[in-house]
Length: 127
Image: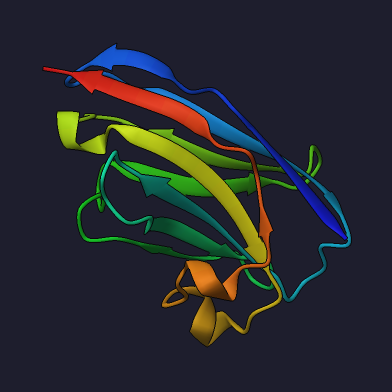
């Protein structure tokens, strides 16, 4: 069983920065995919960034490349999403997800591939 708890959301102006954290607990070994998704009001949940624990490989949605960085603090069992140059279209509820996936699938996986989810944290970017 895996438990995920997000923190770090908030409200910022366009151009600002936020750092999201996802505390992970449970059986996460070196073949898990950890990811951040987001969901804006009235829209489907979309993948933002992914991190494969077996090697630290990362992947990003085109809309956030160069602005968001996903990483993992292994000592604290925490998945991090550092967000800079935020835009109003980044507004939404951000979710941490985990699943037992291969490295190849990790970066193309959709929400249905992840059995474990956090409760979400709100990010609001004003113009």
